Structures are given as structure tokens and as C-alpha cells.
Image: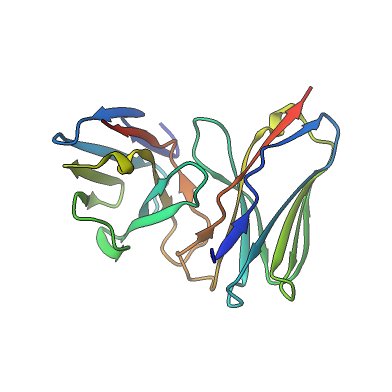
Length: 113
Length: 112
């Protein structure tokens, strides 16, 4: 595997379910990000981790809970989501938080029913 | 007012045409300007990066920044069907700033 991988690629969940999204980067980077991409809207930065420490929590509802156990892995735990949370969730990494170039994974297409 | 405005299109052009994409922004502190390309079912990938005003050319791609007008452009010459994608502009205030402000993206189709 190379670059940034995300699993699952597609997820359908009910509003009462609990699920997790996984991201793994194989680039030796120190910073990792979660973004939300909704149709016809700009990418929304959700969380930023630098060396496993959270440095940004961009007013994201508590039903989204990130976890970064090491600099290569990032999780997004989901519970009691709303239909408006349906979107493409993108993971990205960069050399560190002071480097502009971010490498994105393919995303997880989430549908909340 | 959105911080970054980008016409979502869609834009459809014949093969070989010049594709012109642009974004306007309101934050005069932006200094770093990027264009990302996102193919269907893929994540965005960095295409071009420009600091401050001026032009930058890379093969068939030219990025222009006009800070006085708060306007950036991307031109694709001799467009190919493989250029069909969504193009996102992004910008930041500083080189050490991980907070990128994105446009909503313009979807481009190049017809063979």
C-alpha cells in the first residue's frame, strides 16, 4: 500500500449505529487531518493531529470522535449521526502542520439513513 | 459572503480547447494559493502551488494570482479527456498554516 488509504470506502449506517472510519498513511508524515466534503460545498476541516496530539477541533459535534493512536493511523468514531452528516469523509496527511501540501486518501462515502 | 468563491460549473469543452478556471476570495491575508485536482471516487491531489502574485507554468497548466483583485486562475492548454475532473482552489495565510480555505470546486468534462 502506498500513500493514504481509507476504509471502508462506503458506509451506510442508521442514526442509532456506532461505526468507525479508518485512515492509514504510508508516507512517514507527522500530521493527519479529517475533512468533510459535501456536494457543492467547500471542504470543511474537522480535526488536525500533529504527532498524535490533537491541535484542531473545528467546532465539530461530539457525535464525531477522532482518535490518533500513532502518527500513521487516524480513526473517526461515529455515533448517533444525523442524515445531514451524509458526505464524503476525507483523510489527509502532511509532512507536518507547517507544510502546505496535503496528501488525501480516496475518502469514505457515508450515508446516514 | 463565502471566504472563497468558485463557480461549480459544470464546464464541458472539446478536446484541445483551453480550460479556464477561477476563484475569488475576500481575505486579503491569503498569500499561498493552490489548485487541487479530484478525479471521481478519488481524493484531491495537489496540482499547482503559487506564492503571492504572478504566474506559474507547469507543462499544459498555468496558474495566475492577482492579489490586487483577489482573483486566481488556472488555465489548461490542449485539454485532454484525462483532464476531466473537479478542480478545487485552496489558499492559506502563511506557509506554516495548515488551515486551507477551499473553493467548492469546478467540475470539468473534456469531450473526445
